[in-house]
Image: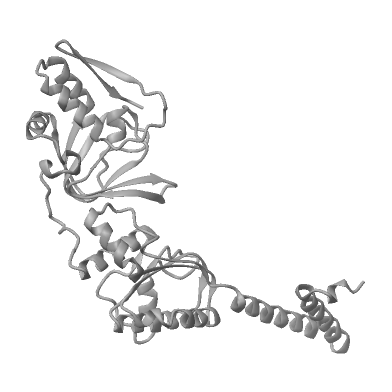
Length: 366
């Protein structure tokens, strides 16, 4: 009958119920209901303060953005990645929970680090929490660091941008000289990596940077004569921001080389939502899967910075093989096929034979 007294989880609930009954009998029903409501609020606040605010925590060595980096940049991020701290918060953020977060991050706030705060799991933020975030940002900035916010949804606050919230509700906050609010964690991590690399002497390429086709990552080590044969087959495309070279499900057989600008590969997850798979800048390429195995595209390609692309169609490679008798065409096709970083899902590769004089070559389509 009194099993609820043996467990701490039910003991407090039972005491609260007895308190409501006592107040109702001693005074009246209204007083009893008020006492119960007050007790429930106090219990809720106690549980929220005791709950872990940090859902997960990592550094830039373990968590990376999807942006493509050079080997030198990756080596620097491996060496100095602990200067990027990734934190995912959860629950309700108010004075009690954020004050404890402030205490847990006290040592980090006195270092020149970039703290990326993922707020995807945050359900609400009150004004006292905003003021504590303001104090954290200002302290971190005084030591040369930044706090970046990602995934602030409308259910958690009155606006999407944390800076707008801080300017509106936190007295004394001065707008940062850089963007510190992002729609996705990936973008926030990329911004933190760019700032870290800039401080280490390797800033990201300028917006108008161009990389010639002979310097593209795919053609490293390929003979100049091979590239000279390919270049006339490539079609140049000038695409503005938000243009889409292709969408999910589009049939295609072309590979694209980025000369200027940036193109994101995205997997749509809703009308306005997506997961970024990679970001390709000058010197990169994309669409290689459909080039090797023509068929429907598996992602959207979206231009995020005005781009110049060179498009090479699989069909044009086939036409070249059909009309070429020079053995160099064999080298051309084999070198190109072997350079594509395709992971074959089919253990039994399929081949398409192309006649070049007396030679027949196979290109794996797995």
